Amino acid sequence: MTYDSVRMLRQIIIVGGGRVGRHSAAKLTDDGFMVTVVEKDPEMVEQFPVPLAGRIIEGDGTEVEILQEANVETADIVAALTDDVETNLHICELAEEIAPAAETHLRIDDDGQEAYAHLDHVNHIVYPAALAAEQTVEQISEPLN
Image (cartoon, rainbow, N blue to C red; front, side, top):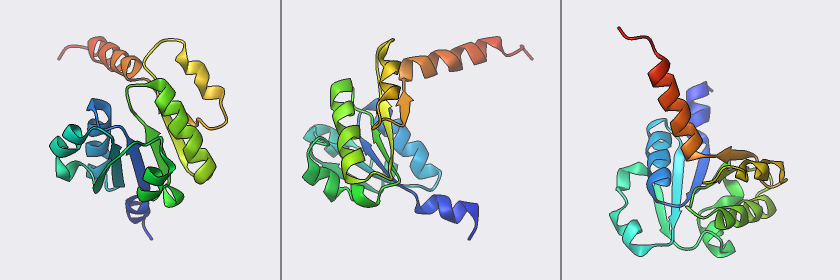
């Protein structure tokens, strides 16, 4: 089995179909991952571009039944990418309880929230503002051609 075929088998659940969730789903799907997006806003679900994810489920990712519908028990990664850190913390906690082998990714939006990385149910922190700043600095620092 090649590395690429192993990667294709990885199952990722993204909770939150906003900008961060959509862009993440698109990139991961393009890279060959099996992506399920959970979004509670029916309008966002309706507008979600179908090719960006294998499945999109309308529902609240803080509800066990919705996570089970997304097959959280077999997920390799659960990325809580809503725009509310408390919601994201709850999703990571539920994922840890239901699927302890799954990696959890917690989106934060404010400086100082990086401290959540010490929690047992949070494996990785996603901080869009810091990532954008890093990319900006990298681009500005590149020598001109």
